[in-house]
Amino acid sequence: MVTALMRALTVIPGKAGTAQLDDLPPPADQGVRLAPLAVGICGTDAEIVRGEYGWAPPSRERLVLGHECIARVAEGAAGLKTGDLVVPIVRHPDPVPCSSCAAGEWDMCRNGLYTEHGIKQIDGFCAESVRVPAEFLVPVAPALDRHAVLVEPTSVVAKAWEHIERIGNRAHWQPRRVLVTGAGPVGLLAALLGRQRGFEVMLFDRVTTGIRPKLAAAIDAGYVTGPLESHLADWPPDIVLECTGATPVIIDVLRQNAPGCVTCLVGVSSQGKPVPVDVGAMNRSLVLENDVVFGSVNANRRHYQQAAAALAAAKPEWLEALISRRVPLDRWQDALARQPDDVKVVLEIAA
Image (cartoon, rainbow, N blue to C red; front, side, top):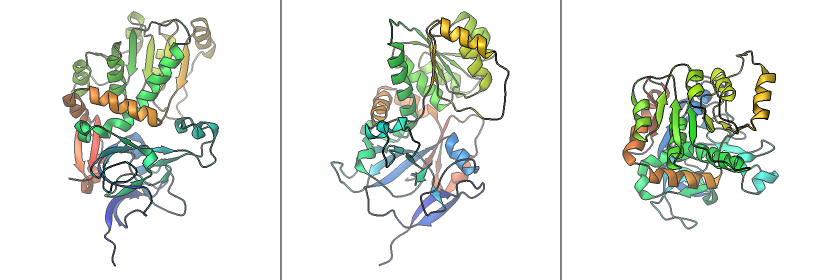
């Protein structure tokens, strides 16, 4: 019997210009069979396509791309019914496992032997059929529909918020002001979760027009541009979520904030751009004001569930406005070609 092939967007990690739409056999009969509906495109995907990042599965040259996914269960199993909406968890624990992975906190893997769909050693979701073990599937409300493609990036900021609150509650803490730097998808979603918590939120971005200021206004968040230092002088934040990875922005937020400020670094910086910094002065400020600076990446099941709940509480029209373009799979090159007004671009896998 001839097995029908499926379309999948693949790439050779480490080699630029190798992305292509392939016809592949469906995945092996392991895990719950899913039909991906849509996959979000992010900066990590662009890096992999440019040959800067990524690892293929063992004994394979090519990797199926895509990690931000909403899918339907194609064949009921493990308590899931055919047609259920699910979001696959991107990271899987290492096989050793380390102490964090053994406790279900694979986002905090200590030995780096974790794997990640569409990024590191496991195929991603830009394919017409995938299989994922049931323990790495998070059911979502039917009302979210394809907006659930935003669950994965929201899980990243849900984890950041959880850790901010844990750290802040080390002492008597009454934060009011939240600064979010960068009004991309992660920054806007971080601002959404801040507003849902009742904080005053200010978004900082270099973009002055278009949809980003409107998205901020729609959730009653402030939006500022221009020199960040001048804004911080009059509005020192109690919490900062830094989502740009831009070195000058990071320096500004560390220099000027409220005493006891908790700063979470979510954006990943580029290397090779040294900037002179008075480390002694920065250390003095951090120590004398009891400030905290920490980094956060990825998410575990708990954060995916928090993300799904946060999106379910948001206005559907706001979530729809966050998605700039929906591009069919056969036009994947258009999805990866960033346009000036893009916030979140989504590849539509199924009609």
